[in-house]
Image (cartoon, rainbow, N blue to C red; front, top):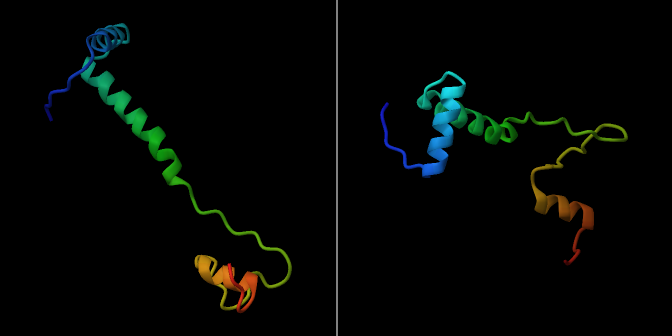
Amino acid sequence: MRTTVRLDDQLFRSAKAHAARTGRTLTALLEDALRALMAVENRGRERRPQPLITYGEGGVQPGVDLDNTADLLDLMEGPGATG
């Protein structure tokens, strides 16, 4: 795909010189740079869920939903507690 990109003049000259020094085209350099940036930014999103470590017997009690913060607060504070 072809597109037009506006770059700062100094950045353009530096990128073009870097591409020449490394034997690549400016297009290849820009593609590599964009892929590297997106890989770094996506690294945090690709984390696998970690198992919840519980202590004591039986793990989580029946009826406890760890994803429901309001219900957890009610369970921890007891019935009729006010904030």
